Amino acid sequence: MDMQDAAERADEILDSVLAEIEPSVQWVHGPTTSGTCTVTRRRTIMTVVSPHRRGSFLGVVDRFWRRGGYRMTSINNDVVFPAIYARTEDGFQVGLTVADKGQVHFTVDSPCVRHSEVADSTSQATAFLAPDAEFIPRPNIHSDFWSATGS
Image: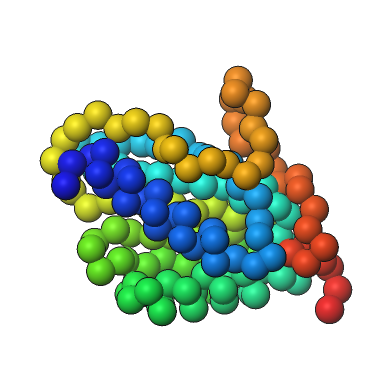
């Protein structure tokens, strides 16, 4: 496997977990980075996930990853900034972190693979981000379910 193959595998991992989330959330690509033998792909959720719904969101992801044979490596149960980290059977590190304003980030780090060029992801983002944007804004898309503040 080379770095491009690893990037494509990371995209598959990200695509599959995002497809599992119902109702669906909207997301944009974060930066792709590479080291001497690793690749990291990122996705940022632009749908507002309220504090009231964070536990449900993390539960959906946790259950999906466990069903897929992922091994949980760390769980942060912080009320404001929870996170889940796991490893796939083929050695990819996956993470879900909740950051400022409840913005959810997914990250996939590849194992060390053969060096190669890495193309941009071909997965189509579901939220708009201006091509010249210098940073990803805070979540700004309302969902009747994920953004709900009451029970």
